[in-house]
Structures are given as structure tokens and as C-alpha cells.
Length: 404
Image 1 (spheres, one colour):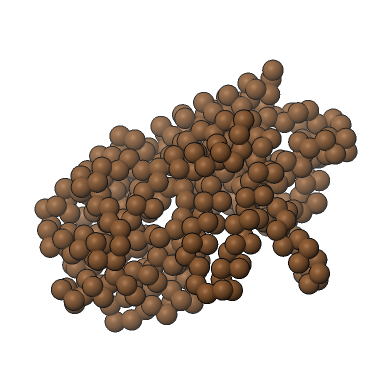
Image 2 (cartoon, rainbow, N blue to C red; image 1 turned 60 degrees about the vertical axis):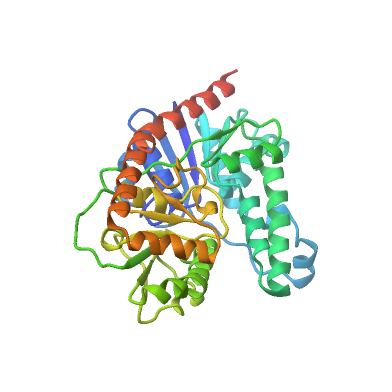
């Protein structure tokens, strides 16, 4: 197949789920298919991804200029306000498609669906009549509506409620408008699949869970710091930040009533101000680290106390691959092959979560058993090689639909 991937940033460095997802799929499939990348960005493409694509083109992206108050009010609920649409980027994509025939266009992430929609719409085809009908894979990964609604449910104060209600309504409009033309939509968890099947009836939605790099993430067997907890993720991402604030304020004090020496390390780039404020004698906020593995390796266990969110949690896949015991909330477990009590402990509510953490901190054999079961789980179900074969089958399905 000849595949054009559209991305809102290049898949390197591997510091978040978006980059991990796109990097590993292009790494696995680039050797079997002719892959080309058009990505928002500037400068030079990283050398680490050069071998995965036949060509890489970076498209400078301009954010929308400041809007007047009347325009902001009249467009407050517009779908077009969710992700910026840059006409110059659109023109560059149209130009590429007019010059080169691809078997499938792979829209990597919901942000790029606004461009594939515009290309596939009637006005765009009249403006560029040489472009054939586009078979588009909408690889959106998560249901943005669910994520926005979860944030809305956890609003704090009237102002927060108003903004999050606006964001939820916008996202509903965006997905209904810009997802409907895809030949297939792919997501990473069953809940996202069910939600999008309702939102975009008639468009097939396929669940393909994320993978994990089993060679990179494996036990390091270094010295342990006990009793210690770790949480990792991008700390500007609202679900991660709010989980950390909740855990430190509501759950950690209950743990320290019985184990006052327990420490928590919050690992991840771009911590928000409220996350940085959590730092103290027994709480470390690292900010960006080049390698999360040493932090996972030396911790007693990983906590994943998310209250909101969608998709799949790469942090749990990575912890499992390193044979770390995990305590997580139910919302943290979408798209995972969980066996509660066997490869993970599931807990909801501050007291239940604290009790589960304390039980594991006091039981080294059980921590080891949970960690070993986690490693077996990802080895059996979550290699990137296996996931790439699933994605490849979907791409072939989309390409075949365009050939008919």
C-alpha cells in the first residue's frame, strides 16, 4: 500500500501516547508499505524517524489570530473552534494529493480530521478536481466527547462549569461533523468504540488497543525504595494533573496514617502549577525526565488514580512490562486486559484506594505476583508487532474501499 499519514506533530520524541502510537505503527509498517508523512511542524524532521517514511514533509502551522469578543460569542459552540484549521496547511495537503495518488490517507488523531473532511467535501473537490475520492482512516484513538464530559462532571466552580460545558458541546459538534466521512474509525478502548458508534452511525469503528515496547520496558532489577509510589504521564494533561492533586490531597494522607514514610514521585513533563505545588518532603515532582524506567523500577508500585479520561493508559502497559504492581481506578483501565486481583488491583473511592495501596505495600510476594502477571499479560496481548498486524488489516480494508 501507498499510505499518506497526516499528523499534528512528528512522532518523536516518545514522551506521550500520541507519539508512541504513531512511532511504533510507522516503525512496524514502514518496511512493508510505502509510507509518507505530512506533519504540522517546522525545522528538520528528527533522524530517528527518517527510516520509517519514504518522505517527510513538515507544514508550518499558524494558530488562529485573536478574535473579537462578538466573534468569540457567536462562535462559542462552533465545531470549527475545537481545533485550528489553517488554510495554508489545507492547501499543501490538497497540492500533495493532486500530484500523487495514495491508496489510503491515515489521519493520525482527531485534530487532523478537520483537514481530511475539508478535502473530501464537495467545495474542496470542486477547487481541486484532480483529487480522487479519498479513502480515509480516522485513527482518532479516543472519544473526545467522553473525555470532555468527564471533565465537565468534575468541574470546580461556576466558571469552570461554564467553560467545560462549552468544550463538551463543541466536541460533540466536532466529532459529529468531521468524523462522518471516514471509511473506518479506529480507537484504543471498547468504551470509545461504543460511544463513537452512537455518535457517527454508519461509520465502522474498530478497537485496536495500544501496544508496548517489550524490549525497552522490562524489569531492571535495581534497588527498591520502599515504601514508594510512582505516577507518570504528561502533567499538563488535565486528567493526569487532576488525578495527582486528588491523590495527594485525599488519598495519600490516609496511607500515611499507617505508613508515614511512604513517598510519591510524580514523573512527567510540563507539570501545571497545581501539580508543582504538591512537591514537599515526601512528594517529588520531577518534571521532564529522559527515561521513566528508573523511576518505575525503584518504586514499590504504580498508582493510577484517574478520575476522568478516555482511551488506554500507556503508563499501565509500561508498568506491567516492567513487572510492577499497579493499583488503578476503574476509569484508568479502558482497553486493558485486566484481571482484577490477578494482574491489577482496582479501587474506587479514597478509602478503598488507600486500603488497596496499603495492602500491597505490606505484601511483597503479592506485589511480585501482580507484576509477573502484568508482564505475562502484555507479552500475550500487547506487543507492537501484533497490534501493527491489526492496524495493517484495517488499512487494507480502507484501501480496498477506495479501489471500488
